[in-house]
Amino acid sequence: MGSTRLPGKSMKLIQGKPTLEILLERLARSKRVDQIVVATTVKREDDIIEHLCERLGYPCYRGSSENVTLRVAEAARGANADIIAEITGDCILTCAEVVDEAIEYFLSHDIDYLSNLMEQTYPQGVDIRVFGAKDLMSNAEIVTATNDIPGQDHVYLYFEEHPEKYRIYRMKAPPEYYRPEWRLDLDYEEDLELLRIIFDSLYPNKPDFTLKDLVAWLDINPQYITINQRMYRKPLR
Image (cartoon, rainbow, N blue to C red; front, side, top):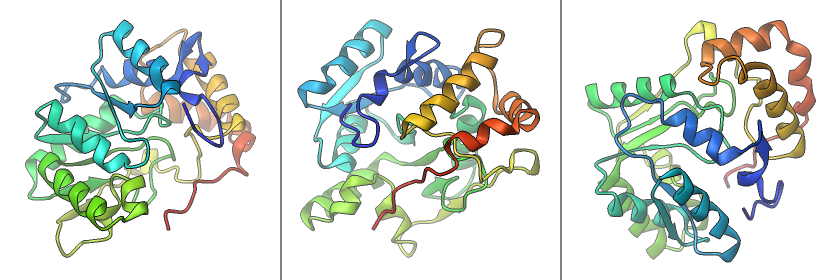
């Protein structure tokens, strides 16, 4: 809830539902995810997130507001997780079929870390990273002990900055979904405006709309992509 660019964004309404509820609804369609856990902070402003999880029946872990890597590692430990498929709360268009494809690849190949963001090929905001829980716990210990602030802020950063330690796979979009210039995540008011238009157009007739549906609709309505074209993702370091 403490986002500096769009305060309270987890509870902004789309189709009458908080954006976090929309994301959880979409992820619940995954065939490969065993459990969904929401990891938020112990700050009072995030009580509302815990209350939403209680209403919807999802476990909510509350931890450090400063050390996100440690928070997610502790949430994974509490859930007895072996493998983590991490999705940030501002990527409400992440699709279950993309999550499942990522998990299936991770399980069937000899890799330690998978990301579809190291080389942007999917639309921005259709994000997925997969890695082992034990590796994340080890990383959390390191970035905490060394006071690596960027490493604490970004759960995935230690993996990506240490390719000598981890077997890394860059998941790329098939040609039909190659839209790296599309910004579909939620960080600014302009992003919220675009997401509301997308959901108002697709959700009422097909609440479980897929990436295929999304791409097809935006391809014939490209004027909406300009709404947030001036926005950008923050650099890591």
